[in-house]
Image 1 (tube, rainbow, N blue to C red):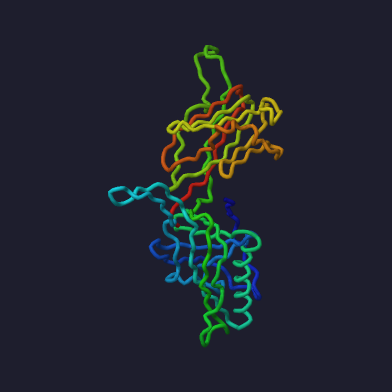
Image 2 (tube, rainbow, N blue to C red):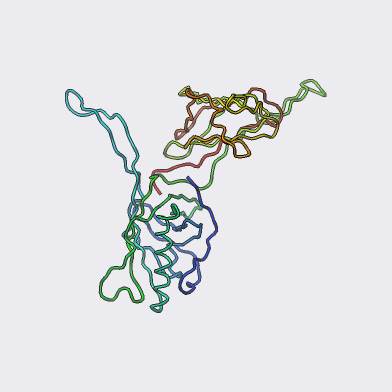
Length: 325
């Protein structure tokens, strides 16, 4: 999923909002946090900074816990059921937002700007809701406006203040750390073991390694291969799943990767791109190729590069995913 880590940009409203400043709220079951919404254009809208003219009503927030699941079961002959399949479902987040101003026009300018920031997700693609903790860690989730940006319709509202209780739809129910983790392995430059004295290269080498996924759920990494290489095999040792990238495949017609040439493999959705953007999906060993993911915890994997040499490298990159905010 696309991750947004843009600096906070003061949003444009009918009249300029009051100055910024720190903020935070106590979220149900989750503790103190600072919340920012990024609209599809990347503009940041702090939702817990009261001085901007709006603030989140924490008591009405919901949908930040574990993802919802659908369980498929088979009846047991002697009663009960056996779990056959678990499927994560999209989640809905309820977010109450109080908007106010010193004058009617100041209030209405902010109300209209916020409404546009959320509803434009239905035309321009998802926005991002970010929860930041006091220790500096952040988790993000993509959101689409579903309903609720309307006033309370009660006496005294809609003049200089009102409350919108929005429902935000999340296609992917998991929260994502916006800071990617990268594992780099590079072929060392060979040295003469005996000259001038017994020695070995200190560089990292390709081969077996253990990759730790600190998240709660499986992640689907991106791989970048840098030549020289004539064939690359990626294997997950505990399951035996693997896939092979062959730059000499007839569908590609490229030949060995030369020094410095790069190919990127995405595992979800499947995509293979050469450095110029051309489609190299035909370089994989279909139909036996399995573009495997990394489970939570330690994963034993192997990179095998045939025809490697100085500069040959593999970079594995992923963003940990979590059940809760």
